[in-house]
Length: 260
Image 1 (cartoon, rainbow, N blue to C red):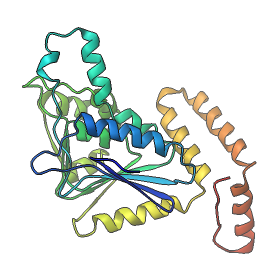
Image 2 (image 1 turned 90 degrees about the vertical axis):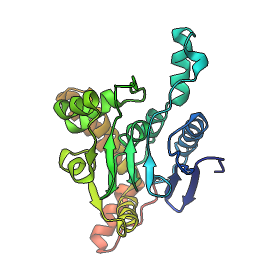
Image 3 (image 1 turned 180 degrees about the vertical axis):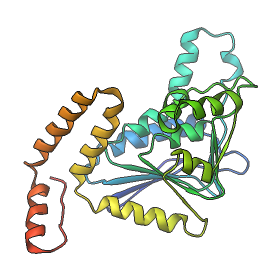
Image 4 (image 1 turned 30 degrees about the vertical axis):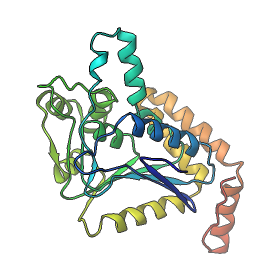
């Protein structure tokens, strides 16, 4: 898939998205937002894709938050709502049906952190820093930070970051559960590739169902979540991959899943 700002490459079972990074401007602008939403829409239709990764360019993932243009200052509320909808990328990436990994090759702040938080797993370089930005210049979040951050790190730390502009080091982010793994610069991409390969080797329908059930758990009661888990488990029993898993176990060989 060809875009002017981002790159989105398909290689076997993996889709790899790279954010743009012109010198001094690693923020997500309107054009990048549109391309990311379109890329996610296209990837959602690719049943063969088992894992999607997103990373930044150079030594930065994505930083800052773009402000509304000056000509929106006196525009109606609906105009601001439309502008925010045009800048939104987090929900599009979160909606991808296959597992996703954010490879945080550098700082992820503001809108960059809002995007990173929607990945299923986050692996970060040990020099990266993470924050939502400062309210002192009225830079209020608009792509999910106030909702997703408390769910990941807990309400106390989330409020600290939101209200004071506190940024976390990579180790602090790991301790808080904001990222899953931390690696050195030399090892980051190797570790990310191994993680992606590990996920892609699993039965793809099962991976998608596991993601669906886990994502829904925050909005369901325990009883509802257990019913969803049981329903998805029953559906999986009818798939070719489930039979292949049983055959490979009996034959003592590596399964060859086909996603059907």
